[in-house]
Length: 362
Image (spheres, rainbow, N blue to C red):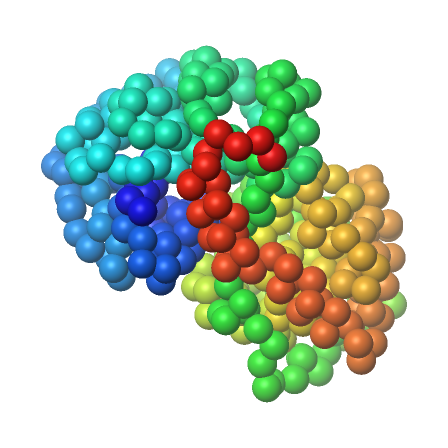
């Protein structure tokens, strides 16, 4: 099967959840004998084509994008034109998997194959009207797609609530169970909390975690908090027990998860929460907020603790409970078992079934 994956940006320029899903999907398709190709953009002036780890990648220029963004237009608006040109000129695919609404609009307008639209966030009213043209482009992509895929039930429900769209498929992003796995090394000797979220992103609420951690230290003076170094230039927390590390590399993140006693993700508005699932794959329980889709990841008490609201005291108590849970001999196996239900192989197989019959109802 020929599958055109379309995304506005890709590695190494941007390394977020969307780009990881694209790469994991491509690798899974290649292993199964299919023919994926990726259409994306880059800041260069010419089209660049290369084969990257077996995946043909086309990078098209994005003219005037910075100017349009400064005028509050939808991000990646020029991607609609360039991706449409790429799809029109390349070999006809059997299906197009668009990983952004602008990618979806390009694929719908190209009209060369059924379109599966993977929506990587939550289509909330406030976000949909935050940029000029975003709502119209999203609606065009959703209405023109043969199938729409959300990352969680929470995100799928938002399609009905804010866009009046029903029949959305739910396929969670996959955890690489080979890269994220329990290792021979023991946990850190001191109680260690890991937060791999972007501390420069307000909705990740790393500031709330730092405040809660200060309270944890009153009970556990030797506790440590490991944070991920942001790519943006922002002030870094400086308090006893806090360490900031470069965790952009997958191997470094996996090692940090194996070292930690507990992983924390206090975010709101998560469409899934892949970093929490990756922690579980390493046998590390997670402490998460009960907002967004995070309860779908930490869905049983054997694998983590959920807290409500935005009170630092509540979060501190949940972190302490998580540290206790980490010392239960059965916790690591329970966490690994839960993560195994969220594997990359499961994600790839679910998408393949949808590619073969994109018009089927969920």
